[in-house]
Length: 237
Ligand SMILES: Nc1nc2c(ncn2[C@@H]2O[C@H](COP(=O)(O)OP(=O)(O)OP(=O)(O)O)[C@@H](O)[C@H]2O)c(=O)[nH]1
Ligand SMILES: [Mg+2]
Picture 1 (cartoon, rainbow, N blue to C red):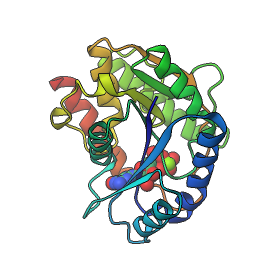
Picture 2 (picture 1 turned 60 degrees about the vertical axis):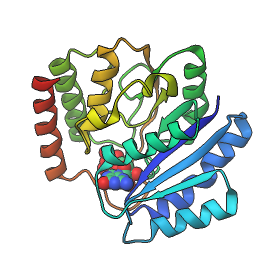
Picture 3 (picture 1 turned 90 degrees about the vertical axis):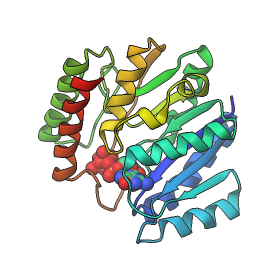
């Protein structure tokens, strides 16, 4: 299955430098027919320049540069459009910061090949882990997950997870211009849409570790925006 690994970046230069060789090593070792699509929002730290250097060096890397920081959901929409137009059959979402280990990529592809249309990398099914997290962060994440599951009536145990994979045939049936969220609520909105359309959804356990370096883009302000967006969605979807 021709697979695109889509990575949104904003100020992730050091992290991306370490991550790309790891992904390429996993692709080579596993035989997954994968390419990387980096969606950079003109990061001030030069992540975009590094992405272009990596692309020139390794091939199999496509770089999308946008003029301004437009949000993680909006970055995924642009990455999806590019991947679909290039004929990729599987699309994997992945963070650039080291939290998502590329060793899980073959398991996502395997599930897509079995026929699943959305495969969620889950922290909250047996085998899933968040080893670095203090209790407070676990409570916030679990509560957020529980709240969104309740609001939308979801079966998915980890609807906010950003490590996931879509089958192109299923994703292309969704009109991305009608997906409202451009920020962190995007992940929840997409799960809700997929479950509503009765896509074949499954979860595989992943380990989510703390970012290697750099700063989180999920600030307190972003979290409030996420909550507002999710509430609005629950009453409009
Ligand atoms: N292109 C683009 N990428 C973004 C934007 N916001 C976040 N990202 C990227 O999306 C990924 C996830 O963002 P993080 O800041 O790590 O959010 P998080 O993983 O929920 O939070 P932490 O666990 O604190 O790292 C990272 O690769 C970010 O660089 C954005 O507005 N535009
Ligand atoms: Mg992160």
